[in-house]
Amino acid sequence: LKQKQLHYLQIYEKNVADYPNQAKAYRDIASTYFSFTDQTEKALQYFQHSLTLKKHPKTYAGLVLCLLKLQRHTEAHIFLKEGLAAFPDDQTLQRLHSLLEHSS
Image 1: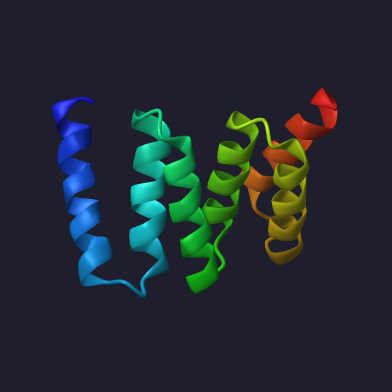
Image 2: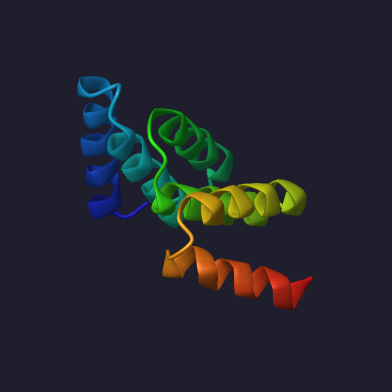
């Protein structure tokens, strides 16, 4: 793990500790785990917790990407459908939908 990402993880872990009811804190740490480590399961858990606190299109996108990386395609489709129902105009979710439709 690069020094900069390690530093961000420490900041985000402090944010989660300081703001346990803030969805963004969990989404930030989940994104860092997903992008810069091989701990996809841990990222998935943080995205799931973030979603229980507040629905956000970036959280749905992160969840879908984690599930795809873990080869859990059925769950990925379910969360993508739920995300699109809540945020039909979100371009990232629309792109993920297009990619999944063309890869099925």
